[in-house]
Image 1: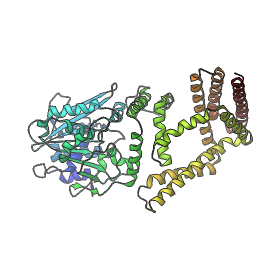
Image 2: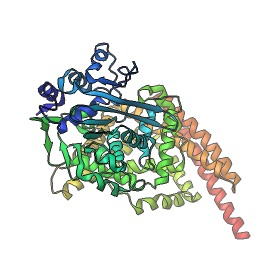
Image 3: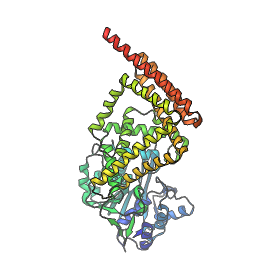
Image 4: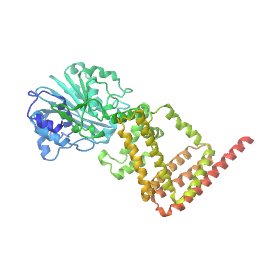
Length: 536
């Protein structure tokens, strides 16, 4: 087996007349579309040879428009533009559009030879609009999809045509091919979908794919996640080997070739199947309108600091994003909560999991339950005093570690000892056990983790207390109490994130006293309400 760059060096001196087009050539041309070709077309010419990109490379101006950095793309780009096979092709109709609001990221280019023409749609770059538009296919048609169709309608003329794209570009190639006019479609010989998602069934009729299926080849890596989202039903699906691991196999530059053909395997990695099932279950559990709210609020928080690219998100901006996420709507919070539930507990989301939060919310709203819980917490805090953060931290991690061991063993028993698809489950289990071991062995780590947990916990309690107080209209006493609790929890939360270990004990005693007072006030209020009700 060989890498894509080695394939180019092996076949580079043979043009398409001497050695006809192959699947590996679709990989190369789609990879070339990830480079910013605007410097080549700066002179206003309508057409350039691919080899005209050489000066751009030598000047260090070959800009890669892709998320995650160069994974070998630059080496492949240089080998291709210097080769006879690809360097002699003509570049035409280069288009590159990006806009923040409404979000748009679209780019396409046509490669022309004497034998055929190839439309390549670029996948996602590192821009915020590009990533938001990716997510939008879960609830609507996108402008980039419509531009892909308009592009194909405009550029396809006489001769033989091939359409292709990778990742988001694959989805655009799918959309364009499915809706292309009959006259233009008759000129298309083949469509190559390279690890691109399919159509969301609530947005587009998946039966549209039936028209193009006989002329379509779908190529996905062994560890496939992106191409399994809304997976299109294409019978000619090839699973290609990659020299990278996990989700990094999505990179075109990592796909392998063997004797001029794709190096394929029979089936996907079981771990990617598990992850894909998790993602699809999560998406399907979210109503279409809630997906829109979730995506809009998430990217509004990301772009609030003026960032236009993921590469601009430094630590300061990420901190602002996290703060912004605290103001998300209940719809979005509920949507986010579903994913870790599935990931940690290895369960299928269903009606039962939807009903449990409502059941627990009713129980926890009872003032007697609240008073009892505060009383127990106050007593525990008083007796544990200075060691409370450490005890709670170890307890929480121990519970989750044991749970992961149980779930892993259960999965092994269910699969009769087979390890297929167990890698991700083992990683989660080992991570929890390792964290538990660190907390037990390293006292300082235990304190730091416990302080962080307590800080986050109290800040979250502050948010919920104040949110509940603002919604309270019928019981003024609980409204005032909620505001007082919110302020105190915010102070305690900030304190735990800042205080040294030497002053933890008095802070915990203060918390214990506040809990006792709070429990007493709630119980007294409940008793008075009961008496008034009995008298009335």
